[in-house]
Length: 455
Image 1: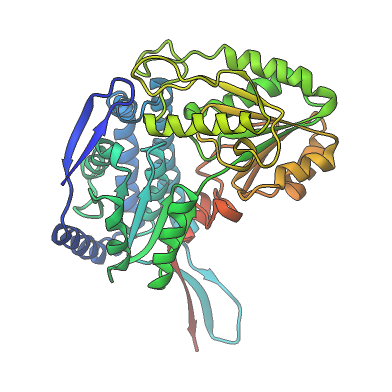
Image 2: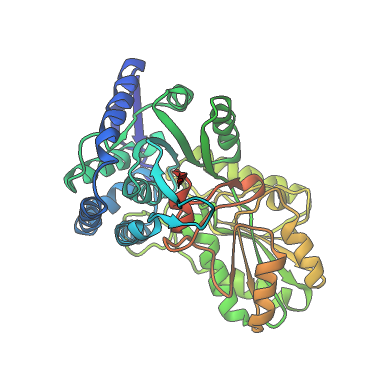
């Protein structure tokens, strides 16, 4: 069978790839296990040199890599370049910090000597999505390879070109064969890979439903998994917020990657006294955003990843309007063959509507009015998701309290947009998943935290 990647702007086939059969999958896993037996013995210094080189190659080949991203999933070319730059930064971060993170920790006990040692688990499977086809992979790849694990990548089928480009970069950087390799397979083959005795754990970034399936399979064979799933991030705008600045930040947060991001802002909860003014500013800034050919520098937004996803989003908008929401911008499918959807603003959004309850994975903003801070917190937390959130206020002490103690999410930002950072752990709660990526905590997820006692 073949796997096709299609440009969502012009519907042209970008690449056609042959799917691996069961025997080839088995061979890939066996090769990864063989590579790991040697890789885990390689010094941090040697691994660090390769990881630094990998970051350098990303920057040297940034333009071609960015074009591959844009061609396969429709991201605006400027954002594609920024994605590659971020991947280089995570390579540098773990190249410089992993040895310190994983050094033995002495613990005083009754033993002559007791300490905690961090050892790699082995071969880790990564099931990754199309929306950030390089970044999602590199935030797995960099810590795990530096920590002594090996990686198998099952990427989204529509970004197979990106997957193979990453595999090629790893090889060019000097990493041994099969330390990181791509499995060109469809979703139905993931269970077979998880079950394999040499695969020690699995990480998935994707939808909540996909996460449940992976977690169920991993649990059935007692293997650890880390899940970064959907989000319906609430951005809370308080009465004392700088409305001009807040509206600008909120629009950018909603439209990152054309709205196709788990941590893109989705629900804007605004206190009643400022709701009208904020809505006006927000809508004006949304209206000003241009969309078109994602490879053209002049456009700020590209396409959605495909028409099926675009049509699903539009149905969510229509269902929300039928339930009482009002669309004051966008909300119509543009003419033409590209998988475009315009920046869209919904007001009068209430619980029970898709625009409140579900993840809107595209450039659609839901504005929700709250009576006071307590009501705003109730609305923000009245969701099955818990990936990220933000609060805007001129009182940073109050903002810190709201972020730390009141908004239920894995990451909360004050007067800034939610984003992942190599230096900070990243992940969600509730239906947004469990486990963490990035920072020291992300590195330790797939390490054997071993206790050693010498009597």
